[in-house]
Figure (cartoon, rainbow, N blue to C red):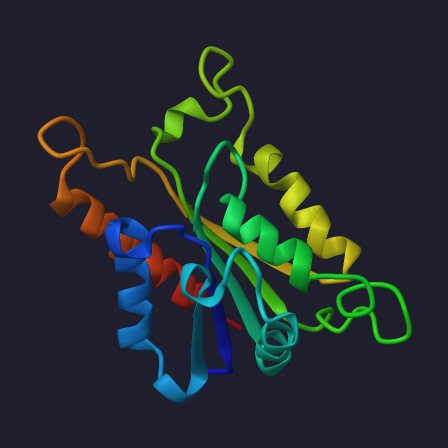
Length: 185
């Protein structure tokens, strides 16, 4: 297995259920020397990131996984800020040293609270998952990345005594993490 960097964009990792469980499963199944987990909520200071340090983490990786809950059909704000700062001109595209990520494998790994049947259903969420991901994939294509895939799990919402079950979400999270492992080059 190659070097893997996970960019964890959950804004409240400790209170997460599914995203936290996915990361824990990956941590226990990938050799520590090959894994670098970047929890964005721990890395930002006043909504600022050490851009050089973050870019170096990406350069060291063969595979980069964006792990996040889908918020309003996109990345959480913290992850979007990280992307805007780190995946920038002169590093990921343009300039003399642009396109430094083009040979990397990228995996979008995300969770959604809604039912699978809601996506692509005109009465609910009219867009399919492929349609929702077009802007995210295009961002990487602009950086000349060719190896882009995604793994997602639906119905990952848990509200105590109201909606979902912890056992079901933990089981889905483990299946999700196993899909990621099978996707790695």
